Amino acid sequence: MSSAEKNPFLQGTLPGLFVRTAAPILLVMATNGLVNIADAWYLGRYTGQPALTAVTIVFPLYLVMIALATLVGGGMASMLARALGADEEEQARIVFSSANWLALIAAIIVAAVFQLFGTWTTLALSGGNAMLADAGHTYLEILVWGSPVFFVLSVNGDAFRCEGRMNLVAAIALLVNAANIAFNYVLIARLGYGVAGAATGTVLAQCTALVFAASIRRRDKGILACQRLKWRLGSMEASRILALGAPQSLTFLGLSVHASAVLFMLQQHAGDSYSATVAAYGIVSRIMTFLYLPMIGLALAMQTIAGNNFGAGLFARSNSSLKIALAASLIYCAGMELIMWQTRTWLGSQFVNEPATVEAFARIVPIVTACYFLQGPIMMTGFYFQAVGEAAKTALLTLPRLWLIAIPLVFALPSFLGERGIWIASPVTDILMLCVTIAVLAASAMRREWRYGLFRETLDAGLGRSSDLVASSNVAIEK
Image (cartoon, rainbow, N blue to C red):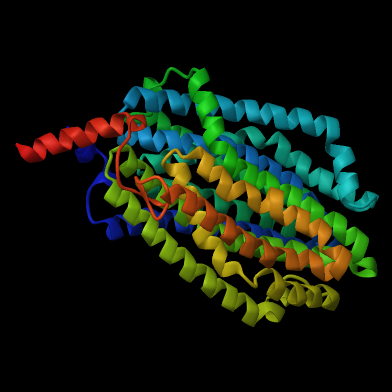
């Protein structure tokens, strides 16, 4: 049986395939975001504003954990999708095994670093407030000790997605999210464990999902079945995973630094309203994360389809998947921006009762979302280049946003505009990133095989297996 006959991503109408692939991922991402929203609601309603502020303060450190999970899972997904598309089964197994080992190594590093610097860091982020620092440290410590489960679960979820088992991906995500919300309700709303309950509920839910995923792998008879894996760490595969995952991972790390910069500048410019503004910022961050996750889901669906088809040399199909993602992300972001503007006061009042926090939320939202409609298409472009193995272009479209633009602006603009400058940095960053994207695509278009700098049209020697598949297909057509 040929690769095209075995691989569901290489056949069928592309719009229908895109819907079937994207719908479960979008559902998964939406429910992931709903967990964050539910956590904030439980903490705000049942524990109070200080608990919500404490969790917001340590959010930058939690983003570091997400960055490491993305470093492994994102890089593995790029390699695994292309290996499966090219029908290279042994290579796929080595990539998957290496990613699981890297996940465990990442968890060990996280635990060691937290033991050394966790107390000092949480105290610094809290501005010296011992009560907030202690609550934040308790929350993060529980998540750190549960990080091996989090990292391995992330890798296996990405692997199921690359295999085209979207229903299974959705089932695992719905299981972990439903369990998370249920555990948090019991631990926070009923038992009153506050921030410790929020973190414990998350870890328990992830353990439940990992047990389920492991049972599936043990019964598997496919390419990545447990009995067919040698569970070794391939040095070449590991280095390639880290290289391909680095741009997306550094994006999350940049989000961590950005959030830390916002907290630091609020300490300097928010004055007596610091606590209320930080709580409002925490709500804004969770809602923006909720909106951001479906975009990642859309990008991952496109990445999976594009990676498989690019690996098989079917460039027309990989190009079309990008076009669909660009259009859908633009419509989504513009719609969400409009909704946020229209409902901001009502939305803030659903989380907390304190008028000062609600007012700060309503003041921040219109500024930070002013150019939100640009973010989706720019993200899709970066994910596409990662899917086709263009690590340099991926880096250029992801790293400058936070590291070279957003973070410096957060530090610079408040000097001229006060606290308002912290929030104005967001739309200015979107505009500047549009300029960066146009420049990258213009440079890419100078290579004749990339139409408009985006769409692959010709082959080169570096495509390897894809070239063989295309040649085989041409021979078959001629016969």
